[in-house]
Length: 193
Image (cartoon, rainbow, N blue to C red):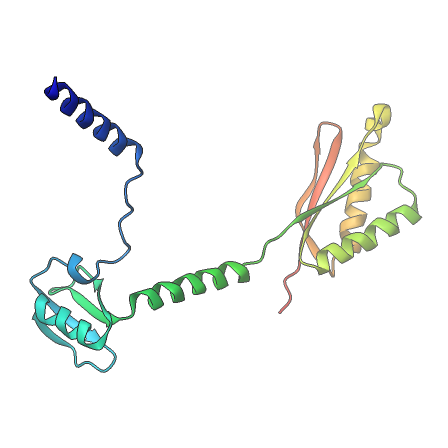
């Protein structure tokens, strides 16, 4: 009876082990996790030197820092004495800054008709100028309702006239193309120097 209890407990333990997410490996080997017998030690205030791992760990602990393996493929591996938590924090900070600097470009959409009058055309043109000056792409389309599809040439002329009026703000990325009942064109902003 006792054998059955022990076996059941082991099965439950194995089942729980499978459910638990596995611990992710650290990006760098640090302190006692460095298994190399001899390493090259570098760091601020240290002369680079080759020494046994125990001596390198003692040097790092005496300074109150961690020993971090930064170049595992070197012979011997290079380890740096540094504050590992501060290093990770600075890496995250740099990554966040890099992401915030990368421009996120939106695509704004403007719809015209094949027989849009001049006032509406100018009104939508001003919107497109604003969108392009903000750094967004503009997707201009002419929608053909019902039988207005016979005016494809007028729609294409409207789009080309629209692109021509926006030449100082953006350049056409895609020329007018008919897709179903829509003829569309994409205008990308001109990058400012």
